[in-house]
Image (cartoon, rainbow, N blue to C red; front, side):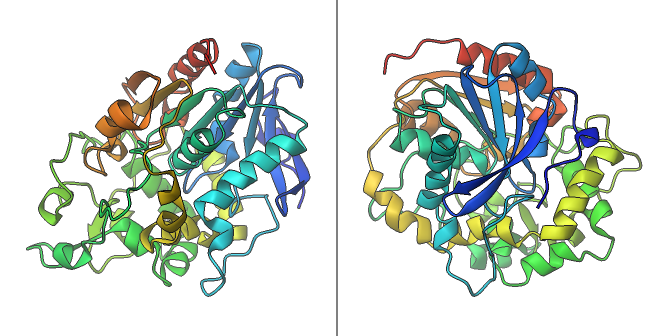
Length: 368
C-alpha cells in the first residue's frame, strides 16, 4: 500500500506508511513539525484520516505536530482482516487502545499532548485516556458522548430490536443492523452506486438536512428511539443504502465536494466496509463489555472537552450519556461545545470552529 498522492491533500499535509504498529502498517496524515507537542486525531465510521484534512493545517499553524491515522479496519492501514467468521479480538476496544499506544511508541513519542476522537474514534480516545492518562494528557471527544465504563450487571444499551419491530411503523436499530452478516455486502454494493450512497448518507447526517433538529430522549425504549431519524433507527426491512436513498441531495455539499467524496469512494471501493463494521459487532455482542467492566467506577482524569454539531442527533442517541459524561465519567470536564451550522461531521462542516476549540484545549494546563 502506498501513501496518498500529495495532489489530493491540502497544502502542508503529508502522507506516509508507518510499519510495526501492533501488527499493522499504519497510514498516517501529518502536518506541522516533529518535535512539537503532538495532537492525535482519531476518525470515525464511515470516514478516514482524510476527514481531518480541514483542521490539520490550523492546528499545525498553532505550533503542533498533528497526526491522523487510518484506524484498524480502514483506508490504507494494512495488517488486518475482517471476515465475518474470523475472531473479533483484534477489533475489541482494548486492542484498539493498544493500537494507539503502539503508534505513540512507533512515532518515538513519550506522550500525546492532546488526543481527539470523533464518532467511533471518540470511545477509542476516551478509553485510551481513561486507561493511560500518563500518555494521553488532554482529551477532546466529538459527536459520541462517553458515559463511562460499564457496570457489573448493567443493562444500558441492550438490544430492544423486538420492541422496535412491533411499532406501528416497524423499525430496527442501525447498530444491530451493522452487526449483521449482510450489512457489509449491502454497503459495499449498493444499488444506487457507492458515490450516491455515501453522498446521501453524509447529507442525511449533516446540518444540510433540515430534519436534523435533535433533542434529548427520555429513555432507552422503542417509543423514544423511534423519534430518531432513519439513519439511526431504520425502517425494519431496509438496508442502510435504501434507508438514506430518498435523502439524496441534488448537488454536492459545500463542505464535501464531489472531488473530496471521491476519495472516500475510492478507498471504500477497495477495502469495503467490513473492517469498520467489526466495532459494532464487538459492542452489540457484548465482547467489549466483558473486558471493560474491569474499569467500572474509574473516571477520565485528564482535562476533557466535548465538541459536536448543534444539529447532531448523535449526542442524544444514547439517552443520558451526554449528562453522564459531564457529571460522572470525566473528573476534569472543561466544556461542552455545540457548534452551529454542523451536524454529525462537525470537523468537516465547521472546521475553523473545531480547530479553535482544540487549540484552546491544547493550551490548557494539566495537573497530572
